[in-house]
Amino acid sequence: MNMSEPKFDAEGSFLVKESRSINFLAGGIMITVFCVSMAFGDYGWGNYLFGLCLFLIPGAVAIARGRRNATLMTIDKAGFYYRGKHIADWKHFYDAAVYDRRAPGRYKDNFVMDFRYYSNDFSLVYTLSIPLTNNQDKAEEEIIEAINFYYNASSRKNETIK
Image 1: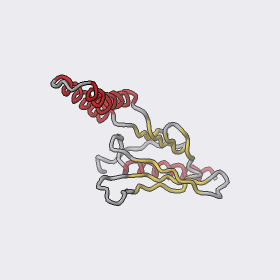
Image 2: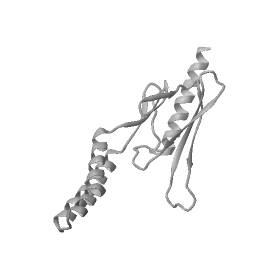
Image 3: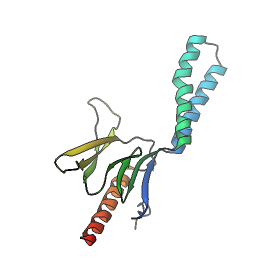
Image 4: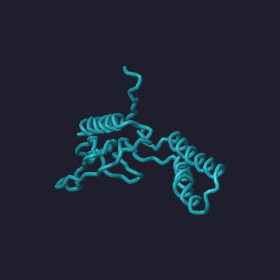
């Protein structure tokens, strides 16, 4: 068994959170740059306000996000949750896939997970596009594996009940 494989528990939950270390590191760097630039120069109020908006405020927001440690996705036997909202149970699940939606002329990755699920009467298929950022603590592959694991566990449970 590969040591990097996540271990899933059919009775537990798979949580995708924002990475605390990345948020703290980015926030610390931005605040440090602001403090150093203000300590070594006398640039006037215009540059002070520019530095405040460019480094201090985003740095404080990044540190606050690291302290909050918000759960972005929860995957468990009950279904799929995004930002605390229940999106679909496994009976209504259709599929999930990760795509790189790069805009023409862009060099940066833009990974998005499309989570598709049926409406309550199974007449429509809805798509929820979830941006996958670089500051999440789980990789795209792990998220898809977790979705497949809990979906298959739910399907086996439903088959044994019938």
